[in-house]
Length: 631
Ligand SMILES: [Zn+2]
Image 1 (cartoon, helix red, strand yellow):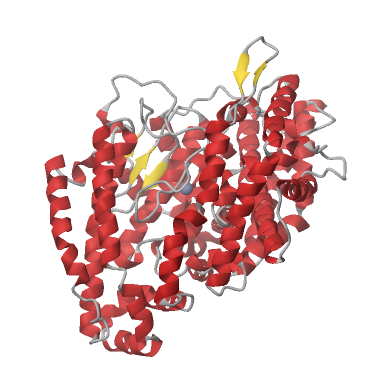
Image 2: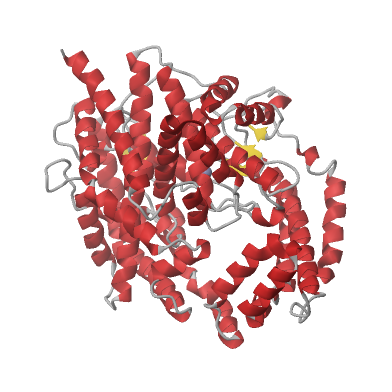
């Protein structure tokens, strides 16, 4: 689940390129389904009738780049000129985004096809040219200053839809440096990010991963992908052998991984200092204007209630029949099922689960989900995982799945349609300029739909085994998406603070720090789970520590989703409308403000308690079933 969570990703608003690709490789692994009904393949003619039409549009936009530079040095002339410049820029961005949404989605269904690659390559050049042509804008706006820009906004009502962008540019302008310094920083961008490339090369290409023989005589190759497959092996001795070999190999390279991660952290700390932020956390949260308090409250509340995670491990030990739980016991499935979730059935389940959102919402989903927005099944060369690509404002979202008729696929379907419906409501209610919502909010919308489908299926489960299956899945999702991500967030913050305090950060030091956190989260001192030095090297395996304070959003998202589902279940129509207003708000404000308007204060403990409480309820239900069976 965790692996799949990392794969499944919202497509970035601007570039329609996935932000995170999985460590298990880019290509979908499953063989082709032959004779796929065209109903399950998206129809891209809504974007452009033909590839020639796409070509013609590309040519037009290439020529039109000169329009973007026409306003350089003139933004302060009048409110009308500013409006014209901003309207021109956003119209251009809207069209170029449609162009790239089309191209990237064609490419993602066949990564080996040079035609798709070539389309993307030509766009890259256009993006670069457009970005260079508009690079004057932010510094010029910052130089105009708050007073003048506010006066313009006050005098020209049509500037209202640009006001959020203008104010946000001014806010970030406080951290823009002199033109010479900015130039030096931009020259240093590539060398400053070299550590991540070195780490990926080492972990994914250069290390010779061990091969071991499992109890059934099968030899397995423990690459990163091999590990994630075999760590869940039902045979405990096999799992132990897998962990010994895999982590042992990482341990051999502890010092080198230490150098690369230290390099990344040093670069981050230096950039935060250069841009005059109080600390590195503040720097990386500033893009979405997220207060540091959100991050710190998340970590604090989780630590206060870490007993709930320990209770889960004890329950896991009980279900696996293991009384000396180790780190190698985290991954095997608690409950197996023969249930299947074909795509049409999945759609019916989701539709059923949306009653709580009212008829209007479910009608919209019912119609959209029949409208060929999805590329459903795996095929050779198709990108693995799943995503929603919603950047083309005046067309419609697209959803790429690799549906395999299992529950995980069904849950992914609910997740991606959660993103898509967020986009639909946003676009109906916001102008293009305010339609770009952030990951911080839309992941809440997506996970909420997963939870709703889970509850719908739980209510209708026909047997105790089926109930146990959904409950076990929910529990594991909360461990992997909430607790584990908070643990990573805590470590990520700790290593940055270590450097901020001027201390040396070596591989050995990171192992020591990680070990302390790992032990605390897994109840080592309390005898819940025995954590050994072997797995304390795990930090070297996690690519996300190079993603600049990204992973905490997995945790805030499932927390926010749990909160809203609770509210809707008890709050009636009012709670529902508040939630729908959150979806309709799109990117009209900073994420924390949008959520606050919907009654959710991400700086308070409420959302984090909501997901932890949910975990307790799930465990109560599982234990009740187990106790009954034990009698
Ligand atoms: Zn998502």
